Structure formats: C-alpha cells, structure tokens
Figure: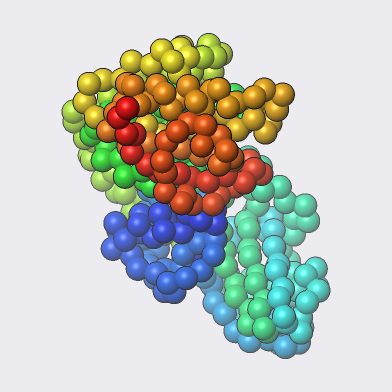
Length: 376
C-alpha cells in the first residue's frame, strides 16, 4: 500500500529522516513537496501520530490512464471507496491537471464524484468551497492527472498536521509547529544538551523541543480523518497511544526561551501548559543582550525578526549585530540554527553559516541557516 507524506518544499530530507526511523523507505528518491512510501494501515496511523515535519499524510487509492471522461468515471469506480469514506460526511475533491487530455478540473471532479456514487450506490454530498484549515473538514480526495495518468489519493490527516492543539495563544508572525520541528531536526540537536531560543515569541521552538526530548508524539491530542473511516481500528490506535506514552526520556535537557515582549512570554507559557511541558522550559522576559546561557555547550535555535511584516519600519541591522556579539561572547562553540530572509542581516551578525535551505515562512522567502559560534 502506498502513502504520501506532504511537506513544505525543502523539508523532504527531514521527512525522509523521520520515515526511516520507522523503517519506512521512499518509493521514489526525488519528489518535490513530499515523500511517497510503502506502508500498512498501522504505518499510516503511526505516521500521523509521530511525524513532526510533514503537513499531511495521503493514502494512494490507485492510479490508471484515462483519456476520456467515460473512461475516467468507469476506472475510478473500481476502487474501494467504501473502506475510507464515511457516508455521513461531505466529500471535497481537489484536482490538478498537467499535460493531459482531460484538463477541465471541475469536470474531472464531477466524474470522480459520479464514480464514487456508482461504487457506493448512493449520491455523495460534494462540498464546493472547502477551506484548508477549517475545524471540521470534509473528507478530502486529491486527483492528479499528469500526461493522462490519473492518481487518486485520500487525505488521512484532516486538519494540517502542524495543528498540534496546544498553540491557542499566538503572537505576530507565528512560526508553524512543523517548521519549528524541522529547524530542530536540521540543527542536529541531540535532545539532551542545552537549547536556547532568545526570540521565542509564542514558544513554538521551545515547546517542540520539549516534546522531542520527552518523546511525546505531536498528534497525541488531536483528531485525524482516518478515525472516521468505516475500517478504522480503534484497538490498534489505542495500542499505539499506549506504546508512545512509555517513551519519555529522563533527565530532561535545559531549554531556555526568552523574548523582550512580556505578552509573548505569557502566550508561550500558556501554550507550554496546554502541551504539558511547562516543567521542561525556563521562560523569561529579557532582551537578547541579557540572555544567561548555561556553561555547557549547546544549541541556539531561533527565528529572529525579519523586518518584513512586524517591524517593517525598523532597521534590524543593529539587532543582528547585537545577536552575533552576544553569541560570540556568551555561547562560544555553540551550534546555531536560524531562519532569516536577508543575507545582509546575517552579514551584520558576523556569524558564518552554511548555504542554507530555501523555505517559505508565512509567505516570506527565508533560508534555514546552520553554523557554529566562533570565539572572539
């Protein structure tokens, strides 16, 4: 059985790293925006529960060639829709067409809806304007036509996987949980050494780090689309939850999160309490110049201001220069990972980084940069 883990472009190696931890291998080595892999239904449950960098998990229902609409409807009706679609929920069909004779997306969606009705022997209710992140999403079906090859997939996640359920309090320009987890994995943080975020905002990086250190699965407290399937195995799911609750590490690392905004610190503390990791994180309201890292070497993982949205009228060159000066003075030898939209700002920091991973954060082009803090 084939599945597909969707992710933000650029994060494919990190998703692959997570999949390999469960003994899952990709079907194809190179694909933008996700990783296709072989697995069982239990693997599908496990991936939704544990993957920290993926946005959505799909199940590949099947694929076939279709050059005409009658052929599309007939072949699509041969697949076991009844195993995955709940009869009391509407269906949303998202279609993409590329270099195919069937190029009219709405017409393709209508034929696939007809095929599902043929298979189920009753009309299906189609939701026309499905919002991506709505609280109770309809059953999402993805249809991709490329060079007349039709690939049918069903979403297994429901809400996007970055919605862990703990981040109800937010600050301006919040960082998605999946991207925060990706920063931590890309940094190489070992889960036991000190971790510092001097621009913590609503606390996402620190909270994701605490969840990793305690081996708490990110999906433990949320609902998934596969739970509404007729073939959902509640007993297996309960066993996976029970198994995951036995993996917490001790002792816990020192995770320090600070921000000069007192409102951000209050939001971060509230989020950490909902995530159940308040005992893992030391929050403090302070400027970057006042950070007090522990003596042991560790990691700085942070998302400083970009000056694009929240502080568009403010020159951040001095802030980045101060960040570099403070890290060289107080964190020599530490590993540092950050997101930044401007290489000029990085130059002002006086820190040396790798070439970086191009990403998008809130519609802004950024790079995930990694380096080591050198001494004066």
